[in-house]
Image 1 (cartoon, rainbow, N blue to C red):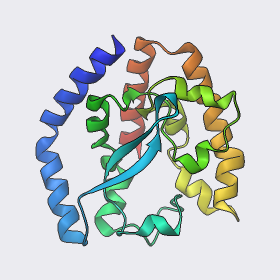
Image 2: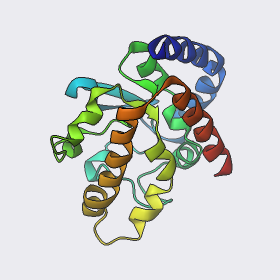
Image 3: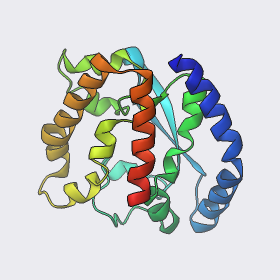
Image 4: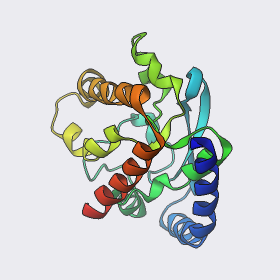
Length: 196
């Protein structure tokens, strides 16, 4: 039932949001040089790599300076990217990932391999399910950039504190998830975005 819901919802979402996709694509192209979409290798279900799609919100090659975005005004973020990220519009292309089967609408957010390599054997169980566009950890840490801005070593703090807490939350999800809980998390995500 979950997979069927993902297919139908992602397909409908892509059709309904196609005018917005076009507007965002034009805005991104006018604002800075580079492609409209940003592709990044993430780790998915069964520990397999896949390409995650986002609207590009940073300057081309900006990820070489670090994978973590720090603060509300990271200088690597473009003018359009600031608003695209603020309202989570950069995440919309992941509906393509959901339709393809790489992801689900709800599930543990997929990490890059660099951070998955720090997982313990127990934490690897978050890879037993499809990763998602949203999860409870993402809602709780929606201000993650601002948190990291205040610490001396953002990368270390992310690995030792934030990532550990996210994994605890997501392991509970893997053990107890249900279709109706997913629906609740989708609505909670919309509410969190509106409150931003």
